[in-house]
Image (cartoon, rainbow, N blue to C red; front, side, top):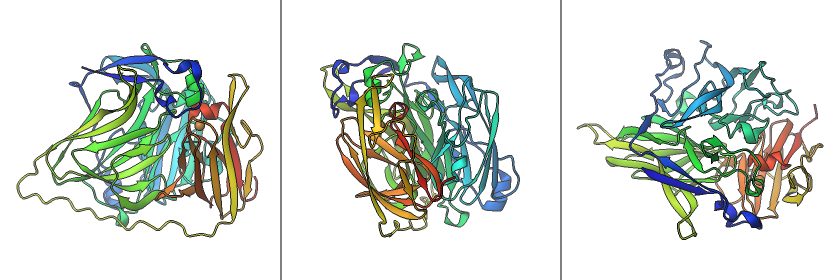
Length: 486
Ligand code: C2O
Ligand code: CU
């Protein structure tokens, strides 16, 4: 048995002020290391194999069955419903789920496919589905300003073409702070075209989340100053929907593709892998020039796509590096194992896997058409005593900007206060000064300024907000237009 202590006071280090909550609640959760949860191997679909070439062997969560035999069309059913879910051995909780599981099943498609999602809402509250990171038409984006939320008992069909290969995710955009916390999220992977698809021995997806438990129930939302200041920092880590260790096996010489998504309400995650090499090949917006980091920092909403190389037999661990308060009261980084892969000796004569990746496209080289500044701050007021703001407005009703379709916009994002903000644009990609790759979410640290260059290539009305669900809920939510209005 091992105990995980995550204190709610973790993130106060960098923060401005939150006087009476320095020693926020500490909750103890028992983990049983001996009990393991094995994720099922999901068989490939013969139809797709014949038409498209093999899809990767995937390990990590259920996969949505493609109900449409035609190539280039992925047609699936998603149902949001409450369900008892086993989060740890002997610990079940009624959560909100897509199709009964946390994370919701993987939706996989190939770039250029048409995706049709028959969605039905069996929750006791309205909802929508937002396809985080997909550059699709705005009326399919799950934006409740455009799409009427789907009422309990009702359905909606989402239909769009997936334009970019990469790792994405889906989640509601109504009462997000509550619905995501209760488990409504899933991964969405858009595979490269078969001729550009690297051939790994298998793929694993790691969906990183945390939940805030009060005893054996989810804590009620917005009951602490801490939660209003920093968003809801959980006290239990959920990896692929379980508080138990995720396990798997592989053979020395193999190579796998791992995709990470941070679906937490607020916690910035940091992960590292021990016992194997890992190389980053992709970010939010798809492929990137490969690089070998020591660890990966994932603010809420972001993704990484990495290759894991098993040179030697042994135990490979995926660790989360978490700031915790130790017995002496100091905040220290502690590594928690969240997954282990048992790597066995390669059978005699087995060649190590060679993987070929198509070259990463260069970042767009475009002249900047426009400079804008975005200021993130908070004021006292509102129902809960604090309002988070974007350019002086909480829950802006009018679009903050109107961009031309195709414009390249430099945005200087200034965070005036201590708490950090993972800032997210819908419908567009951007590059971040000093970072490789394309992104749709960027972390703006406490009292930091970040510069991004956004490519306004997808016309429509789009949301821009902090992805800390509690910040967005109390005001840090705005929107912008690209091209002509509706
Ligand atoms: Cu994950 Cu409004 O987004
Ligand atoms: Cu924020």
